[in-house]
Length: 114
Image (cartoon, rainbow, N blue to C red; front, side, top):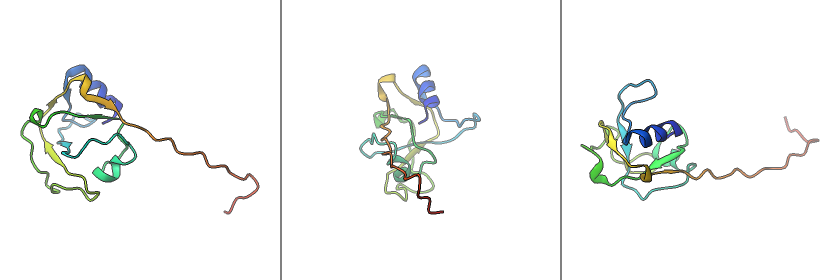
């Protein structure tokens, strides 16, 4: 989730089920072991952006879970479940993702191959 979603979830105690335009959207969950790596999550779970935070909640807190139309597994091999309802969350269940640093590559200022 984004930083704004994490802030909202922390302040309200609910994972939002709306997008940035306040339009309803399903909230996706996985039964996989949690990942802390923000660089791995987009490929495994078909995310448009790297998540900044994750919420790890017990499955019994997710109301009316169902398999999404796309199926139970993403193209990256991650499992997925959705709910159309808000999900209760406590601040302790929200944690920042690890943002691995990209190593700096030295550039030779005299060589430009284009």
